[in-house]
Image 1 (cartoon, rainbow, N blue to C red):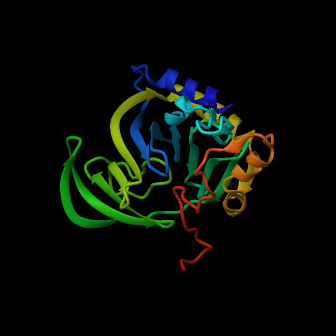
Image 2 (image 1 turned 90 degrees about the vertical axis):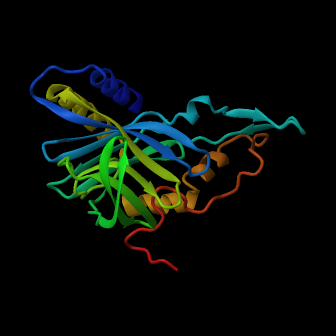
Length: 264
């Protein structure tokens, strides 16, 4: 179902609007290296006090073979792919102090509602030109990762992609110190308010169609089922085997440690 959301979103927003009542749409290139590297586009905008962030499909999934055969034994193997197609849908409701997100767990896409976490960014004192913009380098810690951000202080924008917020300006580049996650600003377009409203209504319909759990419940499901993978494997025919070398992984998503947990 989230296919039509992205298609409607892009079909509207790649056409430049001449409407004076327009809103800026910030476009990012998103790079994740949490296993197999992937690239996708991210879009973020603010409307009526809420922040909306969405991405394109995960690029490598489109070309990934779901069924392969062992060269040595000829036994078919299944490449396990969770529900969804890598599209991220998230909304930060600033007045309600709530953040809504979507996650793929096994054969299901679920929705989580959590308390909005405000990040604290500290200047490192370093300055650098990034994508033609004079930026200051800032640092913040969030759920087990340390992030660095180059921020253009001349642009009055305090939000960024995903769950990033509370900036003193426009984030042009954000990445973690292990270089596994990166968001790079690639463009700013102005789009008509009516197009944004149309998109928001479609997204709201989609989010309300999903099973809703708390973030804590999602993390428990993620940990107990290897992000739903064990559930999928248990339903496969006996003669199908997982790709050799694939083992149960430790928690390795964007977020590693949560507020109710302590580091050992």
